[in-house]
Image 1 (cartoon, rainbow, N blue to C red):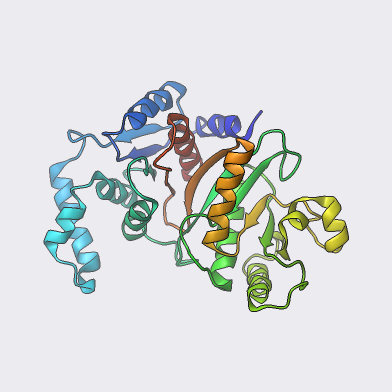
Image 2 (tube, one colour):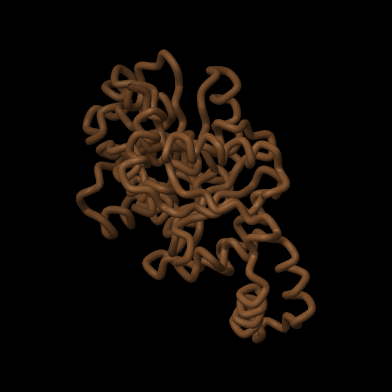
Length: 309
């Protein structure tokens, strides 16, 4: 059974309420039908008749009070809430929805901003990042072609602490959603000090901080891509590595590398790429590519539902 099929099966075990703000997108409407038919979640599509006017006014006031110290005025807040995205994010904050999926007609920056401001950050990390679930067909690497790629959507140039948080939350997702034992590789152009630069040193610091955060996570770095996922190469370049060239969670040194990598792998191997899935929030939320297909929305809802279980 493929990773995606397992995700759908697991989501159906305990249905959760997942809000879909983009009611005017045809793909969202079609996805809602499939989600209901397969019993993956209870989708809340925010058509105008679903939005409660009194509740919306309360959310506007609550948001205004949260951020008034940042010199935002009430009229500006009302403009934000003209978009159902913010109403949906506040529903999730309040627990009236268990998670949120959007991005079919919003940019990642728009969705991330609404989620960070309304849903809030997990106090353990105080940063938001993202990952993709990658399912590569006919692939012997990773976990039979299944990987987590992080961060590919949010933090442009993470420092060592941020990288350690990205790794921890991505590993957490791998365990909960994919039921994998995470094997984390911090990627670099260097393997174990083969290049003496500040960039490589940052990766080593991130590994040390991850070990401090969670000693039990199987992780290594800095590793070149082939040393991370090809056992034969790992045996040559880093024979003492605890992951032995079998990484399934790949942590990229910056957003540029991560975003380029996921898009190249997606196009060159015809793999499924689910995400960006936001990490580090108080409640689960997922972004979508504006070029997404109906099945992408369905599967992101399934992932978000599992994370809320």
